[in-house]
Image (cartoon, rainbow over all chains, first blue to last red; front, side):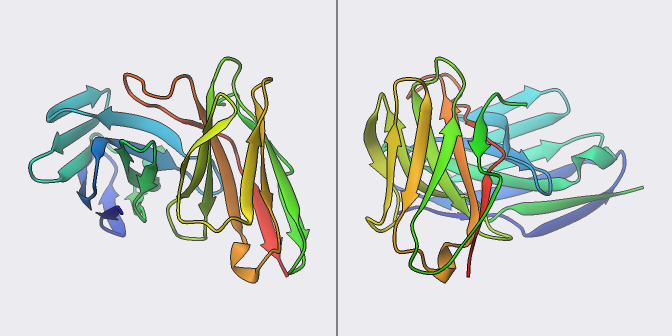
Length: 109
Length: 115
């Protein structure tokens, strides 16, 4: 099976940088995804890493180390609208996407 | 907006009843997955359909079943409802089974309450 660990809550001020770590244990690892979900909304795709290294998409970056079974999502220049839950999710080679419990990010003025 | 729609938005059922939830994927998306999200938790994978065949299933009992239709719509059926089935049910579609980024497009969900 799969298990993922990520912090439950992070609080930061506008303009700050936040890093959300994700460690996983899985069989048949294929890739690591990140999703954002606002209260009452649907999860929306942020990024995907299949290979080691950093992927940058605007203010958000995602990193993967397959040998360490570890990844992180970096949120830069935080804005109030970034207050949401962030989920790491492991894609395994049996077509399953397994989500972590989520990290609630609260951005304060 | 992801172009994925779900109906109904909210639903209240009693224990032991059966329910059917519906999802309409983006046109051209051959893959649809269904998830159960309890309050304060991450989505839990129920199953995935590719070209109308189930090709992956999570740890859910057989009373959770699904169908995918050629017109990019799908449904999730749950029999013999239990109180613990109360959750947000999400469907997500993707263009291909394996893609460059494996992005899934989620619908807004159906909030099911079992009394």
